[in-house]
Length: 138
Length: 138
Length: 138
Image (cartoon, rainbow over all chains, first blue to last red; front, top):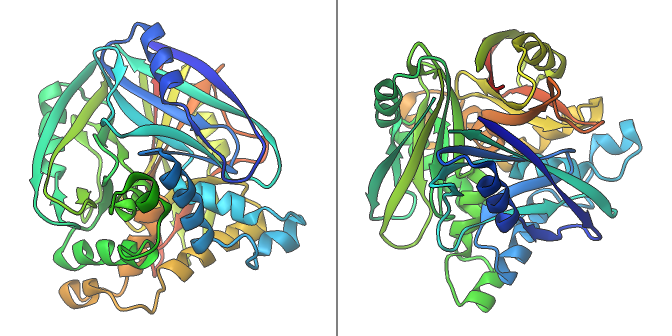
């Protein structure tokens, strides 16, 4: 059995985080699938999907650590070849990952007590995001 | 067809690695699923799942490189907001990834000769870990 | 329903990128699966799979950023224990990820307009690569 739905998010700022845990859980529940996996995928390569304790502090830290590693004001070949200023957005999202697969048991995603599924905007301008949630199982 | 089982691990120290390849392979074999995928997921956001040649040297290097990038003694907002000293644990685990999906063929996970599936403890205290293994296929 | 096929690639140089989007799409189409997920996995732990806008600039940047983080001429325990000079190859591939799972809708992988699935060679010598593509769904 497979069920697929979209989550739509409008973002304003770089490094906004969105907690999508309850929306993913709702899609899993509606699917009627009791045991299996749920894949959460951001369409587009400048936004990432991860899992963390998404309180205010870590929501800030995740963006800060990616900036330390892939600085927004760094030199990237993408600027020359694509005349685009968001090389860091692509690189940060790819390193975080665009896709997360979580097990489903008893009709719910299995997560720790302090564990949320989040979307991280890495682009430099407001975006309309589509996140595809696919539940597979029985 | 879907089969799901747990692997339980007790950890003592930060950056302990556990080779879970043979336990994953056993669960795949028992499932009777010949072709498909197997998802390996750590419940909780301070431990990661990856794949590497898990000899003693690289088992050390993976922790060392994460420490270089996300230093345990760095400044993190999480310390202020959650009064918690393990921001680096969350960040390291998220960057490594909490979830790995491996193909299954002829009733076995497909891996390279020198490729193991490992769990990396990133937390700062002993933990009882539950890793969910979900096999999907036919 | 499950369908599984291989993509074979010969690589010559470290940090070669290969756009495998159209080959993945072809396997999905041939599978007859309309809705589900497709898992793309590199067999072996010194090559990674990711998703990015794979124009010439970013294809360079992704390798450069991994080298900054995990320098090829760094000191790694793997050199001592395994007498092997490619510790950085394992670490870079693990951090990028060896596995990517993308949703399938209407018989095609769902990707953004400027989003490709790529293989990144991280090893230090020419390799024959096998990438397993597994489509699950209905």
